[in-house]
Image (cartoon, rainbow, N blue to C red):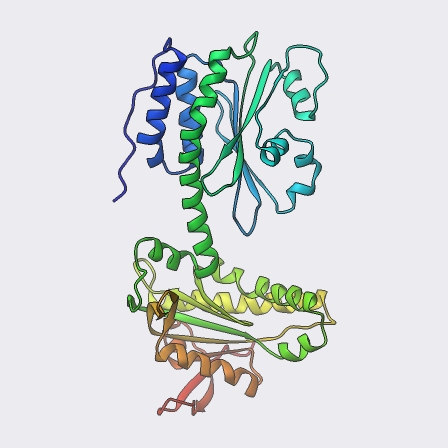
Length: 402
């Protein structure tokens, strides 16, 4: 189990900058690395520095974020206020917010800059003028370099008359290597967790981080299964440009995937234009609740496609959804150093066979007998069908007609 950070006392006011540097570096390496994330590290760091008598009134940490939804994150500390956390979209490098900010030359040139704000000298960035208007007297910003070669930025500012002393400036420069080591550790942990969630899902990502990484390391789970497949996409993509194909396919995923998360499910696989999701039966979730969640996600996804088609009538998208309830093996399969964390088993195969009937029967949603029987309300029987690979005839159901 991860250990809790130690309750290291705050530095005593009056410590020399050299003594304070040793204390803060020791705290960073010994204790701060056990804090949950960079927000907490920045907050406790600033509290310790302020308690030692260094007149900080604003400290910021600017980090590049390897995340599919945002490019970077900045955290700002001010005394008596909660950490202000801001996320920046991809493409921020082309905006005035970045080009006209002191963060840019630090990251691009790897140099330290400082400006005195208590005079009338012309300032090169708008934010410096804003800080001067707020009463700040001294601002400094330095590169925070990770071992992987990524350069970030760390700034500190004061309203103290006369600004920071030379010794106080040396303190900040001396603690940056230790701070960078801890910040990188927290950023990498967040990146690894985020990237696993992005590519294998939140639950699978957690299991992998917890050590379920060996081939054949699987366990059985009982769950509702949902398989969504896009119809006639090959024909559609044949007449669209490659860029339009990607855009259209992402519109489809934007319709059918968010409802899975909204109703407590997990997307396990994206297979071309197919989406396989599971809804667990577990503590606090009965079998009926798992199936109701899967059905709600399926109907929401289909409704979203209808709404999308009204906006894009030239490229209508239609999908078939299969719903089943059963037991699957959940874990690692593959060969050598290339594994896949997925679900396998006869019930997954049955779900796939049912989905193929959606086209043949001209249905948008078909559910198995096991799924229909688990629901708390009656369903409309379609009939008995022979499915390839299954000796027993399968009774299939759909939603009752309105």
